[in-house]
Picture 1 (spheres, rainbow, N blue to C red):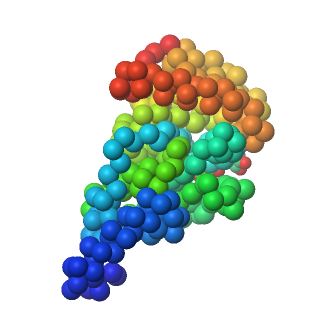
Picture 2 (cartoon, protein in one colour; picture 1 turned 120 degrees about the horizontal axis):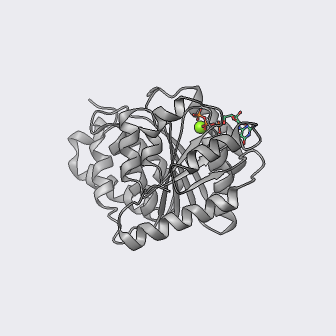
Length: 264
Ligand SMILES: Nc1nc2c(ncn2[C@@H]2O[C@H](COP(=O)(O)OP(=O)(O)OP(=O)(O)O)[C@@H](O)[C@H]2O)c(=O)[nH]1
Ligand SMILES: [Mg+2]
């Protein structure tokens, strides 16, 4: 018997409970959103039944992937962006995906703590994602969780990934706006990143602008990519410019119907 196996013997009840759950998600009820995402993580049939009932006709959420090596400052940047989009009145969801440690590790806990200023804001939903189930892996669970948030009326959805594993790069290729966060002074590592996460990025952020190497890293990357900017996430410097760059990428995506990532 599965964790929710009680329903296996009662198909009617299962269908009923899936439709109730879907209804509550559509109403934007946070507990229902969290529960449905858990069911999907666990690969439970009830979750898939509910998800099918959620089909959004015209998805309109802005989905923004934020990727980069551990400690680059992804969560600190998202924290600033969440505050900015909240000021504009948007409902914001954050999914922190950790491919490297499927059993919730310190990094994910850290994410929650760093974004605590939003913990009491009912317009912000923050969730770590892992797969405990068997179907599809984390990339597909992430897509499903995005659909749940869209159906629940979230206007802006961030997906934080470390961007090292293959699965994480896969997520990035289906997200219309990918922001890669780089810490200054990485030296040769930047070359490896160019063949990986920087290659899928639409906007590159050199974070920790207060670091002495920041301007050099910025110059180097500008020679290679057309959308590179410097941010100091801890102070918020450069965040308005980042929001403008994200809006520009979204405009291009809407115009062309496909992600664009061209050279300088
Ligand atoms: N000096 C400086 N430190 C920063 C800046 N942005 C973030 N940090 C610090 O860098 C550390 C890592 O930041 P996080 O936002 O947790 O980085 P992350 O990329 O989300 O890390 P993981 O989730 O562990 O992969 C924290 O101690 C931040 O306070 C910045 O602009 N300047
Ligand atoms: Mg983080």
